[in-house]
Image 1 (cartoon, rainbow, N blue to C red):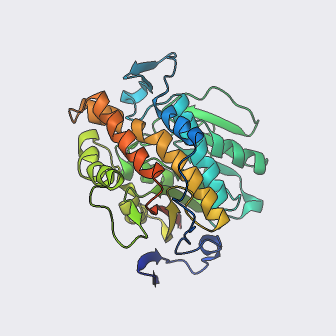
Image 2 (cartoon, helix red, strand yellow):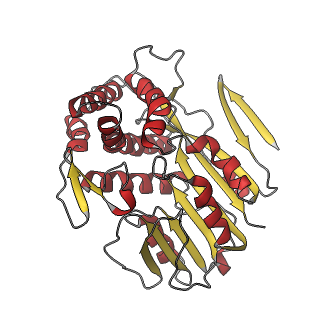
Image 3 (cartoon, rainbow, N blue to C red):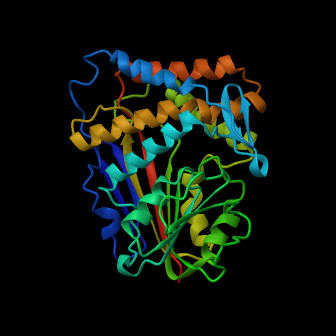
Length: 352
């Protein structure tokens, strides 16, 4: 079934093909974000300005990493267009904490039988916050985090990490391992062959296992009467969607196509849910206000890294131009005049 909801002129589309929708629908979040009338009456605190500038912090180099334009990148499998450094670590943990707040301290929405959860994979695990959290909460499950960047530590006995390209064959320590849940989060711009990735997820799952993917849709929208014609935030979204995917050879728009591609890989009972995430603490709802604070932090610590390599290598931007674009977007946020939000898209599907 397809549900269309139009509240105060804001369309929200939720597509459900699985009869048990409770896991996707019980997040208790407003469809239309309530606006805090005091938002914009006060200037941004000095501390916020100082935090925003941290997007230009320098990180030290390490083995099999390289420095480029003041950011650190890894070189494994031809590298990744986004940095892997202290700023990206802050960005990653901000996303992790924001998702826990959105999902009310749940690590996944898929209707997995938690009492029988034996094996879990986290694709693009990064520093392993999600993988370690699941391993801690489900000590009887084996959790495997997979990424192109090396993981420095194994903290929990039931959580391991492997340096691997998930679009290639998965060479597991236990070749007989089949996963009950495969988790993917915020991998936009990081995968060259999504069809191969989804096929590997399908092939390495038990019958009845679930795939779950979360991506921010790069499409800034506003609940205001009109969009400012000179908005730097909106312009960067449009530029990213029109130029960066082609230039990088990677899909920055996977949120638009992942549901169909997951179905094409053979998964059934595929569901999609979209949640509007405020950019900044402009909501009158206390939970949405905190979500907005997290998302503003995620945006400010991520934007330069998302643009820098692709724009300077393939699109003939200078580093100064990238930084100026970031500063313009940050200033627009700090003015506290617009009520911007981004859709968070969640897709889950079951292996028959």
